[in-house]
Structures are given as structure tokens and as C-alpha cells.
Image (tube, rainbow, N blue to C red; front, side):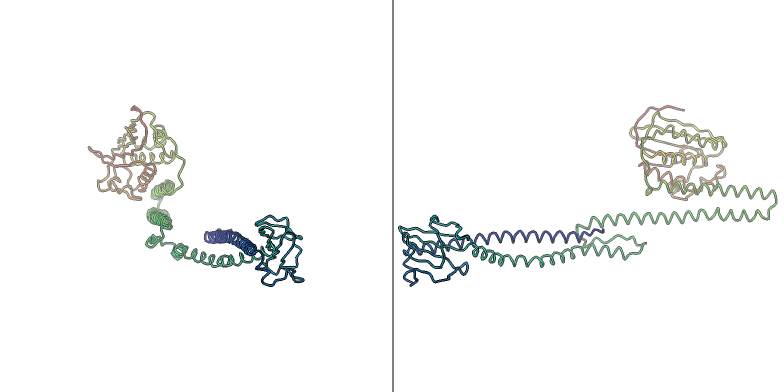
Length: 455
């Protein structure tokens, strides 16, 4: 069942209005009943006191006979039963009623006489006794009717209050509905931020969070579009070359055929590496699902990467040295750190000429761990040192004939290094060697300390 805040708010407000008005009506009824009861009691007292003050002569002088007329009954709450006694003799009775109130105490009391409940007020003065009584059933009915008439206007106002509450809820939710309509009317490509002007303060945090989310989505979409375009461009060249090479094989002789096959294999290898790098870049993307972080010992991880690429640097007869501290640890994702180390080392191996040198250094500093790779390759032009971190960018100086790596790079290795370093709050810097050709890649992590040793 779909929940609706507006429907719930309407229900709760309606219940609250009915509850409050009901409580007020109940209290008004109780108060009115008490006030009317006190008023009727005051009337009984006043009537009995006036008769007693005149010794009953007021009734007798009016010509009222002591004997009441036949079949006389109490007609309503305004009709009182009055009896006047002089000693034991009844000198006046207003109705034909057998009403024995001899046991009634002086003052106000409630008596049951002839199976009926009466509200009685008795005044005794010398031999004179004045009894004024009122039928309690008629009295309570009148009180109830009067009290109900008083609370009916309060009950009638409930529907009007509910309608007003619903209209106010509708008006209050209008800005939210306007935002919903504005978002629904947008095209999938429209990720411009929503205007915050005239926005209620309660909705402003939601709209700001939504704007921030759309900004991130816009950046991600732009990056994906740029990445797709660049990837298509990068794959188009080797695919086209491969098609031409395959076409040339059909008319080639045996010797030429072998040359074209060799070139085709090199092209396939380059495409394989490019696709692998693309998949790696997608896996380490900041928006990808994060892996579990843990304490990572860097020393064995660097040695593992060196063993994996051992065949490559031995083939080029490279001299590789590794200076490191003992028990160096960082906190992060081991799989991604290994990819980063592999890319940095492979990059140095590719662009270092045969019989060149590569020096690796892993040292513990006061508040950080520094991993540094220094090669004897061609280096990078100062103007391109920052650009090489862009995807698919390949520096011209790095692709020199003497390095043996012309056209072999995908332009993604250092981009992957940058992404992983950013996720681990590390700093990556490229500098050319101050003396002679070569490049220094420095990665600085936050970590703990250890002493220095050499391998």
C-alpha cells in the first residue's frame, strides 16, 4: 500500500480536531449541567424562603384553596410541588400528590418518594414547614436538552475545521508538488540545478541535496561520455590497422605474410592491453562499489609485483634496485594498491631503454609513507607533466624509439594510478630527474613508522 504524507496528515489533523472539539463539548456539557443544576437549586431555595418569610400567607391570600384540584400533575421542570404544613396540618398543596417529606431534613436534599426521585428544599420556621420539590427526571431532561443546545454549535464547526485543514494541507504541499512536476517535466539529459528562490526553508535542504546529487550525476555522465568517446577513438585505430593488415595478408607472399601476422599480433596485443586497462579503470572509478579496506603491508606487495614483471625487465636487461623500510603498512584496498604499484612499475619498465636502471624506494617518514620509482627513460616535457594523468593522453617524449615503447602505451596507466591514489587520499607527483634523462614517480601515503634497510 502506497503511503501518503498528505493523507496521513489529513487523517491525524481530523482526529485531532474531532478529539479536541469532542473534549471541549464534553467539558461544556458538564459545566452547563452543573450550572443549570445550581440554578434550579437556587430557585427551590428562593421559592421556599419567600413562602416561609410570609408564613404561607402569600399563597393563602392569593385565594388558592388548601385542597388541590383533582388530577393535578407536575407539568414540567418549571412546575414545582409546594406543600405548607402548620404543625401536622397541611394548609396548602399545589398538586394532587401523596408526598410524604416528613423525614426530609431542613435545606436541600434528594428524596425517593413514590418510586420517583425528587430534589427537595425544606424550610422550617416555628410550627410552619414549607416544602418545595421538583421532579428530578424532568429536571435532568431539561438540563440535558439545554446543555445539548449549547454544544451543538461546537459540534457543527467540526466539518468546517476539517475542510479548512485540508485546504491548508493542500496549499502547504503546493511547493513540493511544483518541484515534483518540474522534475517530471525534465528530459533525461536535463540536470540543471533547481532554483532555490522562494523555496520554503523546510524544503531547501532537500532541494540542495537534490542539486548536489544532480551535479554529481552530470559530472559522471560527462565523464562517461568523454570516456566512451575516447575509448571508441582509441579502439578505432588498431581495429582499422588490423583490418588493413588482414586484407594485405591475402595478396602477400610467405615472407610478407609472416611480417603481416607479426604486426597483427602486435595490434591484437595492444588492443588486449587497452581493453584490460579500460576494465581496470572502470573498477577503480570513484563511483564504483568500494572494496573492504584493511591494513596493507607494502613491502611484500612491491616484491610480488616485481616478481610478476621479472621476465619483462630481464628481457630488457634492466638493473632494478629496491630500498625499503621494514614493516611499512598503509590502510586501504589491497587489490587496488597492487594495481597502482603494477602500473607505476610497468610504466617505468616500458619507457626505460634496454640495459637502463630503475630504482624503487619505499621509506617511512614522520607522518607518511613514500613510494618512489626513478627510471632512466626519456622523461616527460615539463608542460606535459600534469597532462599525462588525463585518460588516453600519451606524452611524445616518453614514446621515444630508444625506449622500445613507441605506440605501445594506452594512455590509461597513470590515469588509473591517479584514481587509486585519490581514493586512498594519497598524493602522486611526477618530476624529471635533475641530472640526466629519467622520470621520478612519487606516491605519498599516510602511515606509521619503521626503520630503513636495503635490498
